[in-house]
Length: 277
Image 1 (tube, rainbow, N blue to C red):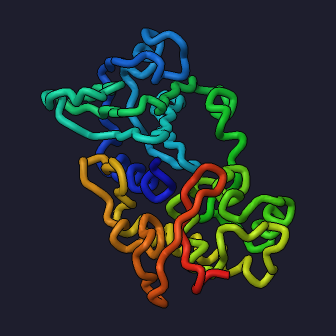
Image 2: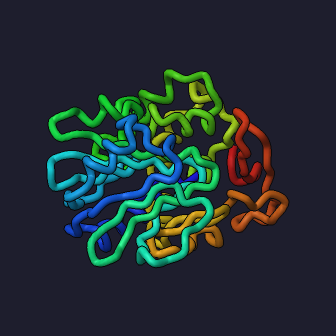
């Protein structure tokens, strides 16, 4: 699933390529991809004639501000891709939505697993009232509000393993499996550590590690362990730099100990039991 760095990479690419061009129409090949409005005809009618002013990111959501004061929301979920293409490009078999622009360009939403969604939010309507998942999001790791005090307050209320808690979008927005593993390694914390038992001296290193690993991944265009592509169809490069994620049975880059892999909350967790305690 694309996480914060991948979604941020897409956002930056969209802001470079898609702004100010008028949308001339669209084509919805999988109707359930459009979460709102419920009428596909209404969705196409509403976007037609508008242009994108700017793309924003909230957690793993992408939000396009449109010229008519409305919004277009996108969540890539597990396998979603947004590609900026010429309209003459052959259709990929997993194409779900096509947003058509002037100059024969289009923004194509490809989604193999079909969990991705799009929303159109009319002007004057609170975005959170339509894209209800936004209201449940915690602060972003790059927000000034993401302080040591904030993180400590959130974690001290949880009896879950720290790895499981970090995947909760009501604790920190945008963090997922890859970067939770990486941040825990960088801060020297075992993923099985119960939040209430986490020593307060570990909170600041954990906060710093989260920001550092997310920043490092954004700098190289995200991670490609499955099928992530940026808007130009290019893979991310962070995978080769990972400290522990997807490196089970390989030697730790710091101490040489074998990287372990366990299941926590149904998700794989990778760690070094020498460097993390």
